[in-house]
Image 1 (tube, rainbow, N blue to C red):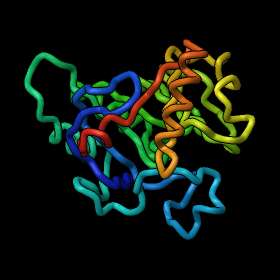
Image 2: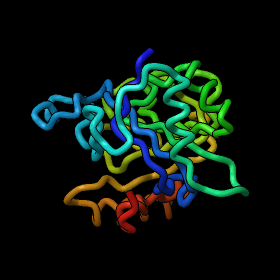
Image 3: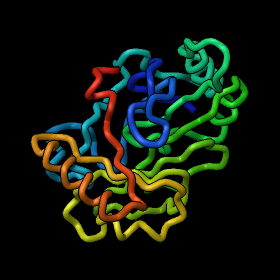
Image 4: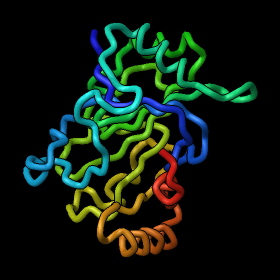
Length: 213
């Protein structure tokens, strides 16, 4: 299998339960809920995506002809010394369109823990060490268990309200204010919701506030 990667670099995880953890950030190209092109956003299932995942032209991006080749590239990006488990965050787009058993095994062979950030429309393969699911309105949630459910908030549709997910088998529940022109108001609303509903914790995109790539 050939893997298409938009970008890959060493950084700190900026959001969710692993905020601040050193990681290799592996962004796969492509998504099943939006083409990634602005002219298609209004007709997309997910219309608020804030990432660029089209093509393979980002830093560290490219086409990788085998799981071994991509795993070696991931390992080559790890810059930390001893004392911590190497960690890779697989994201997109939708990483589960490409992340398969062969790549999981190849990355594990190089000593990494594997985190995945998925929209939950594809059942995750075995072997993922940390699974974060971020549900989107109007998209059927196939993956209903994992380590972390991170809901971009607010979404207006009834099926994307926080209460619709509280009975699912996740360990952590996060609300993440939707970015954009209404970010301050969305953050205020998320804070108030978490204060009223303590099962939910606030997830802030710290990398954006701090200017971390």
